[in-house]
Length: 597
Image 1 (cartoon, rainbow, N blue to C red):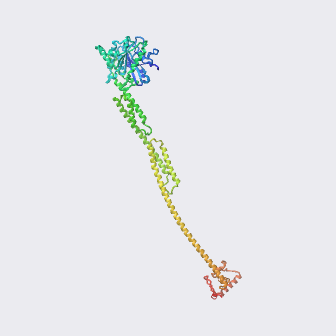
Image 2 (spheres, one colour):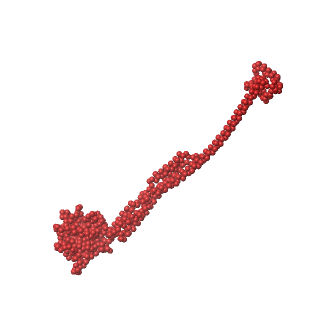
Image 3 (cartoon, rainbow, N blue to C red):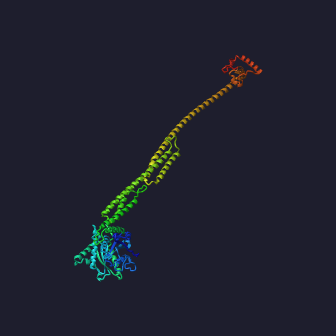
């Protein structure tokens, strides 16, 4: 086992102007550290009846361990030690909960002038505890029932609609029993309370006890020096844990912090009442428990709201995880599961409705914020598309194209189109909304693809025009070539004709020369020398054909021999006047020479 817990003060009674019923910080700190479930066991009775010793052994790891110090302060003199109430928490096995033991001051505390303090403690016990141990030393006197009835009377000061929930179990513990009969098996306390022979005020006391406590059982606890002490403490602890009744409100198990809140509020209410003998500190514990229940429900609702806010945050960017209807339903279902023990209470329905309202409000706020981010992303996407569209427009040639683009140039435009799409994807990479990016890419495609299509159409038109121009130029060139060929053919023909004429002329000249030769040889015509002399003399047109060019024109002066020749020529001319030499360069033979001799 571990170390034994130590008791701390929980409640003290003030004096003078101080608050009458004070809750101590040490006790509240212990309570606030306890998770649920927590069962409260209050130990009451007269002073010097063994309450503190019993409490110390209940919270020890080893009951009956005489070597360990007592958790609660104890005394060995007639003077009481406990004032107000002290507490210590004993952890159950397997971390299944805590048993909170409350040691209250004795009902006959001589340091008080009346029983108002004890009644105030009893009032708190009925408000909070589920088990009450009333200690009596040695025996069960009739006075014991008077004390128990007085304790039960404090329960009547609880103003509540559900008084049955403030009905603890009663264990009458006889310490160091004098009579062996008290150890006899059987419920001696229940027999005493049911004894029909008791009448009058004693009957009323017993009925009040039976009404104030649910289960009633009598146990014994041997003297500390007795060998059976350990066994008795173990039995007492088992009885206290047998019917586990942790502190709860509306079916919701309370934690130590919840119990501390209820206790603080109840003590504040009790302190408003007088401290005299006529103590009637009527309180309404329901409001305190309701406040605790409300706080627990609100805490559960706050946890669900916080979880929902983490799942559906007011993000600083667009998110596609805001389909929160299912998450709202899940948060409400989780709240119902956590608070199912109080699901039927009106308060539960109210807080659940408030939780649903806050979940819806947060969802709407998240949607509004998301729409703002979506609009911002759409503006960014539109700006990117516009910039890329303008940039792509500047890359395109003017339409109509003055001449067709080269295949490399057109392919370069297609490549630039792909580059613009890649640049769009890169620029939109920081955006969170996939739909916005897809729409932007589609819009960019719808803007630049038609531009490229227009260029492609213009390219087709330019190619057609160029083809037609080339065909027309080819036709013109062909026509020109045909005309040139025709001219060349005509020229060739002319050349051939000229060649033929020259050949004919040559043949004619040759034939003429041959004819002249034969005619001269035959004596048909005068010898050529005489004709030449005649031509020289007469300077006829025929001289151009038979004389050198240098002799076409006579010189103005010449040597004497030349002049002599001129005279001879003149004579020759006169002598041959009878010969008909035509000036039209034709040559006729004399008539007397027409026939051959």
